[in-house]
Amino acid sequence: MQIDDTPEGAKWYVVHTYSGYENKVKANLEKIVENRGMQDYILDIVVPMEEQIEIKDGRKKATLKKVFPGYVLVKMIMTDESWYVVRNTRGVTGFVGPGSKPVPLSDEEVRMMGVEEFMPVLDYEVGDNVRVATGPLENFIGVVEEINLEKRKVRVSVSMFGRETPVELELFQIQKI
Image (cartoon, rainbow, N blue to C red; front, side):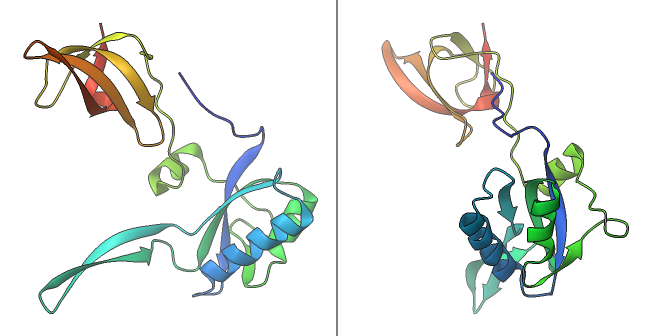
């Protein structure tokens, strides 16, 4: 079960911005895409962030920090018009690549950056008998009731103490029998 609704030719590109303008560039670009009806060419705009825990005055505080300050990632189908729109967005200084030729990120680079979650290929589906492979319910047998790819969870009905009990597990915790 592989889900990939990415249009043919869409790739991730790195756009260089003025430092501190990443979120403004993202907002401006989203407005331009909407106003010009370019949703089929410019598919996603991301400012990669990571959560960091800071301890101040003995209290933990979670904050989001930019992973690549000065850069915005854009998933787009490269055409003259889409290039022009991104390149001429306020706050953008250019695409990353030699000269004026943007170079798309490889699948491996995209995976390393964690920008796009790749959907796992599952060998089971709703209704299949499965065995729990890891965790406290290891070796329990059950039936797949629901698969939630967005949350990367699966609900399995297992027999515990003579009763059917639904449990939520990670996608990788079960194996088809």
